[in-house]
Image (tube, rainbow, N blue to C red; front, side):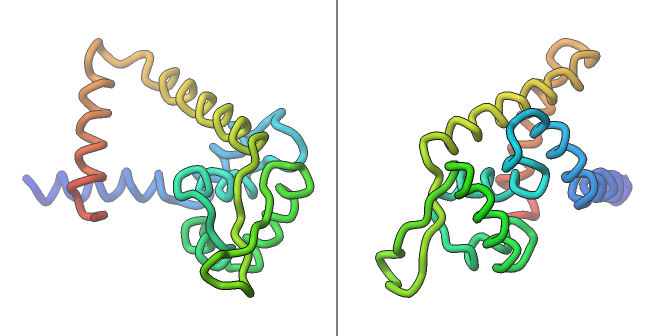
Length: 147
């Protein structure tokens, strides 16, 4: 019985974690956000919002591309005024990517859109079920196999 649940969860996570699933969602969320914000640059903005200033090399594993891919995406975001580069105080040769105030506003809008998208997709669930799911999902991510 328990093994079946494990397989069911693993299958669901496989769908959620697929790069194509994320890219489709990011494309939907970024529509109308401006030329620099799209399904490719969304992960850079989102990761910087979660972690704070980071180098392109440090950010690469979180974004799922190599350092040069992060750098290309960051250049687009920098040209749009959403991020800036600052010298890394611990390594004078390196630069950190930092969200600007405009970048923080863009991330806030993207998070609002994502929350609304999630709520809309759960609107047909029975009362209380979405809240229970949210509680258990948070518990699973904090206490489960990802820690």
